[in-house]
Image (cartoon, rainbow, N blue to C red; front, side):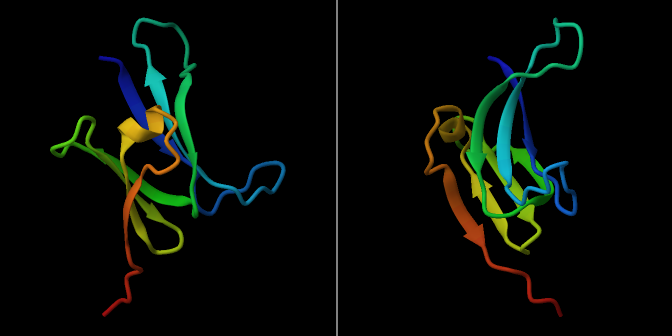
Length: 100
């Protein structure tokens, strides 16, 4: 099986174009290759930028990717669907934390 890593647009960062778009990407890691190039194998436009991303194993083909967005919402995506180019990869969203 290939080795993958999840990456997303970081919160509180601007690129040279001042774009406000955000994406969740799955990159392939080739440990036999020289250098830092990692090809993007799946990409999905998402609603907010990320404070944190975690890829965990659950009883699914490839687990789930959880992202904490700068909008305060925790979102869960199916990485197998992202790799297949399925725009419906979002599994659920947990509402904004209201605080104590």
